[in-house]
Structures are given as structure tokens and as C-alpha cells.
Length: 408
Image (cartoon, rainbow, N blue to C red; front, top):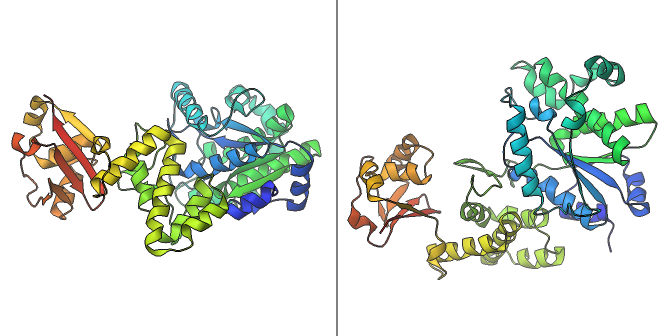
């Protein structure tokens, strides 16, 4: 069986790593406790979190112990990494609601059972922290000059970095030190945009405890052109079915660029590498099957097998390959609702195919909308009950379909 670090490298997970040779030895010698932090700034994780979660799962399957650290304390401030503006301030109640939802999502891939992964919340030690004691205990080990060279702060300097955000690195470092004390946690892993913050925690442990601590970062999920994946016209790709339907989630992966299929299969599924190489070896038309496998496997991991197969069947029905059309995304409306939303643009907004009526008008004006196979050219085009005889089919662009039916 290959070493877990070799497996992660083969699948493309490793971006940066500290004391690599010593970490190889440590993984062979003992069950390593490691942690990943999740700031609960929303009630759902998104595709950007997917790579760290998959890495956690691989490490746990190799026999090591994950800590999923919820940022109930740091989430009250917000990480400045990758931001050009100040994050929205959340209440304690909002943060706790987000934490509860995120835990449910993580449980699909991470085992929190007996002797399994640990769920922690840094609110337990940050919310009642004495500020003077914190400065004396932690702040003394940090150079402001060095902190300002960190990429996470550079990006905020032009807009104005608040002192609130400036504390974030110290708090994340404190988290690592605290977890080291509580659980003998020796490794922090996370996205490559967290490199400066993760290094700060390992350095704090070495300074205060004279103990070894390690860091691994993972690449951000980007396409072959180097652009972040997981963005759609409707915004971020959330892992919550209430924010993004399993069908739309499936379709995103079904339509990735040919050049990105193999990388996504390696990073976002548990399929063996030999099977992935076989799926992608021939290229060309055979990649369509590889994309279907990718979409099905990823949707299965996030939404479960039933939703994944429903999305697969709906896609087959829509694109002329048979399948069960009962799984096509559908909105049922009453006749009173139709009377109040009698234009195509109203239905686009009502069903969520467009984020707003304004966006719907722009889509129609650009020739990107059809109803029952006919292109819509008038931004004020109306619909009638006759259009709903077999269910009115809205289409946006080449790939987005949504059926609207009338009650009764």
C-alpha cells in the first residue's frame, strides 16, 4: 500500500509542505492527529472547500485522525485571505446556525463516530480570551513587519486592512497551539491561500513548546486556464441542495472542459487512479463517458446516490438519450401565480433560472432563452395556459432546462 503522502501527491493534492522527510516518518510511525479549519461565514460550504474535505477523508481512510475545527470565534471576525473587502459581521446565533449546517455536510465524507474525527469549535477558547494575557502569551512571538509581507494581508492593504482582521493570523495560530495542547495535533492542512496563517501556527508551537509541528497546503480548485472553478452565472456552487439543486450541481461537472476531467476525477472522487487513467486515456468522444462518471461520483458524495442518479436520469432525458423525465427540475405553480407572473421574464425569476427579472431581460435580449423549443425575442413575451399543455419548458443557454407545470 503506498504511503499516504505519495497517494496525495499522485492525486494532485500537495501544493506546499514543511519538513517533508520528517512528516513521511511520522505518518509511518503513528496515528497523526491533524486539523482543518472551517469559518462558518455562511450556512453551507461551497466547492472551494471540497479539496480540503477530500484530503481529510483520504487521511482518515489511511488511519489518521482529523479534527474539523469550526471557527465559531474567528468567524465573528472573518479571514481576510483572498478578500478585497471586509466580511459581513455575524451574530453568535448566525454563526452557531452555520456551524450546525456545516457539520451535517462534513458528515457525508468524514466519520465522526467513536474514535473517529473530532468536531471542535474555537469559540470554546477564543470567546472568553483575556486580551492582555493573549498579547503577552501569543502577540510577543509575532513580528508586525513580517506579518505585513503575508499575501493574505497584502491584498487588503489597498482597500484598508482593519485591526480586527489583522488579529486573524494570531488567532488561527493560537488555534493550532490550543489543539496541540488538547489533542496532540501535529499537523494543520488547508488551502494554499492559508499558507501564511498555517505557518504561523506551526511556528508558535515550536517557539512555545519546543515541539515539532507540520503544515500542508492544497492547491485551489482551478481549471486548465488557471481560473477558479466552482463559479456559475448564479454565483458560488454551494454544497447545500437548498442553495444549488443536485441537478445543477451534476450538470456543472458534466460540462467541465475536457482538459479538466482527469484532474477533477483525481481530486474530487475516490476512484482508483488506474480506473481514472482508463477513463481518460482515449480522449475525444470517450471523455463524455468520463464526464458522466465525474458528475455522478461527485454528486453522489455531496447529495447521496439517489439524488445523483435522479440528476443523471434527468440529464439523459433532456439531451435525447432516454432517461426518466420525472427527474427534470420542475416548479409547480397555481393559476393565480400564473396570472401575476404571466410573462416569460417573470417565470425566469420565479423559477430561479435567472437571479432577477433584470437578468432575465438581459438573457432574452441576448437570444439566450427559449420556451418549448422556440427562441424568445420579446422581453415582454407572455405565456398562456396552452403553453403548459405538457409542461412549459424554459431553456437558458445550451444546458440549463427547467420545466414549469400548472396545478391540477
